[in-house]
Picture 1 (tube, rainbow over the protein chains, first blue to last red):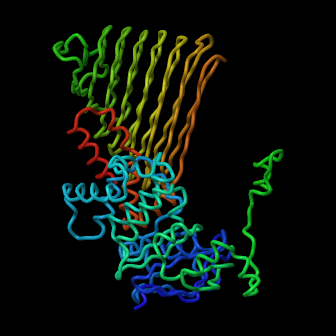
Picture 2: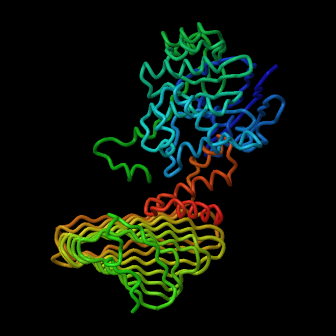
Length: 272
Length: 264
């Protein structure tokens, strides 16, 4: 049975269309690699699935076990079982990580988790993600290194036990050992009842978590699907073959910062 | 003038004593810290229209934590700080109503220093105004002022901080920080950090931020299952909670947490 079904999904940000008709479905138990050049809509798709208010869905539908996801608020989607491990988790000053985790766990059940049970679960999860327990007692992502932020995302995934996990470049900022730890956790929790949609630019993560399928997004559309050999091919040869073999022109990512260079005034450029 | 506290009266067997105070009767009240003393005071009850005059003799320290649970309109705190002495003032305001508080700290001698911490939650139709004046009256004086506020519903909250360094008071340092988080369109929040400086050889900075809750923070917390109200409460609590550091009594800390929850 399809866990997630996306039909003709169009989405825009600040009036610019990013997703231009996505059709995808995910079965339970699948680990799907989402590949594509920078700026072609991969993170947008994950944020739209989670309900980020910056992105406006203009057409199409998303169903999760036959529930209309687009009609749900962000927190309702989370409680339904969606989880987005973010590319750049924000630092939230003053909010204690443990208080936040406990509040998030408590949203999953009628009965609040006891202090003893919470700290026992937290202790076990921090050991699994190989982060010091101290990480949970600090303010949420505040002053965390890039690697600590990513591990904190995985810690949350473990504690909240979601059904469908969206990982947005979870391996960026992680050293080799940390990628191994994160992969071990993913391999441990993935199973027949869960689904994963994973964005990464590096084959190392995919070598460790063994995706069952790979999809390639170009210009806001899914243009190619395949098995893990597709990941290997892209890792070795890049995306050029998509243009030469499929005749798809790969639009270049808009880089506004190019306007600013040493010798020019960034403020003047920004207000032009 | 009523003597609210004199450090001579403390129990000498203990290094640092936490004393609970209440100022309700006389209009003017004095707190005097004698030379060499190191005192923690907790002021739990201040009535309207009261003045608290504080004097720190040389080489003394005072940490004064004020918890405003009830209306505190027209209250003045004036502190005169002597040589090599330090005053820490923590003001936790989670009261309802119209409050007007004026704080003046005079750093009168070399190495006199102060730090001021304010945490205020203004809700419903509260109208609150805090004016903090720090006067560097001598070279080599140091001050830091941190003001955090949350303004919601139809409430008004004003932080006004004026730090003055007069000519000749070299090597002094003064830092001001004011942040107010605004929840609703009908809330009015104003932060006015003012530096009056008539000397070149010094360090000073001031900052003021008034704005709504960060959308990315809200998205992050709600994406973990908290509804918007729960997420806002957690963020607000985190914003105001650092004031707890000035309250060395666990029962009072719990009471402050409950007051914030109650006002949210």
